[in-house]
Amino acid sequence: MMDDAAFSAWQEKVEGTNISSTTLLATDYLNHFNEIVMLLEMVPDMPDMIEDCKEWAPKSYQEHFRDSAFSDKELAIEAYEHVPPKFRRPFEETIEHLNTIVAHAVSQLETIIETGDEDLLRVTASAVTTSLQKFMDVASGIIHGSAKTMSQDEIDAALAL
Image 1 (cartoon, helix red, strand yellow):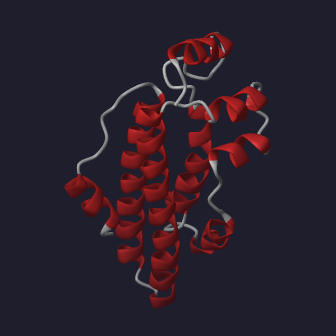
Image 2 (tube, rainbow, N blue to C red):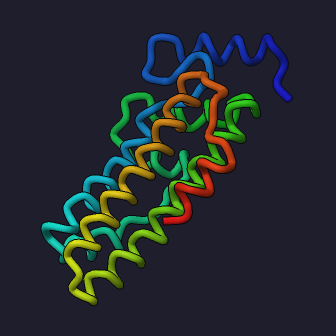
């Protein structure tokens, strides 16, 4: 566990960057999920976009920044090791839920495309992207210092798509 002085030093290191000095997390990571949400939203109108969706893969926070053009990417990678557990645990759990939803959704949408049911495809894609957005909102809140997460009932409902 990091002491207060060490955490304060990290808070000063990230001051003036796009990394939260409250949590040491950066919202830029959510761009990884914005990408798949945009692709999934296109699937009802362009079913062949499912191939692009299948190419999307989960990336850890550090992997995302290693591969990104984010100006403070090295600092973001290093700071992640110092994110307080009260933020890191719920953040990582939320990211796991996002990855689970994406994996399930891609497979589900691919099956629906094979059946040719355009209405079901549209409804399912919409439900999936709405669910992903809810989890991204939670992740964004955590990044900005909120301790609010979703209730287990909300999580279960979102994962039950």
